[in-house]
Length: 147
Image 1 (cartoon, rainbow, N blue to C red):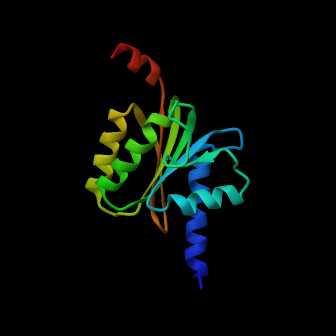
Image 2: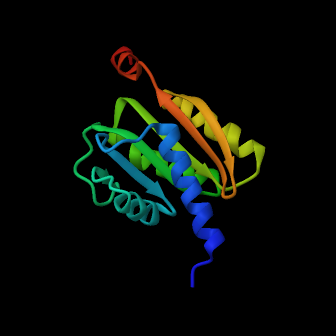
């Protein structure tokens, strides 16, 4: 049997990720991380039809405008998920990451990794499951052309 508190906590995280990234039915989104299948199914139940996962998605063509990453306990887990979704994301993508660790150094390392990928952190929201960070990539196409 599923604990009602656990379900409510999970729903709070999903609501927070949707709100921070401004996800709508018009967006193509990709989900990754340790809890990605659970997140994928929950979003599908909510009516989001343009959701995919790196393993089941089409060839990466930088056409997804939103990425949602869950289950981040360690830097390596989160970095692996970021590497998975990166080829799918457009030049002006938004990303939300659930960090389940309370370690401050982990937040700084994730921030550095996001900045290397052209993202700028816009918000961070604490919830029962941890911290949800949202970041946006602005002008990344210009950076790619310069490189």
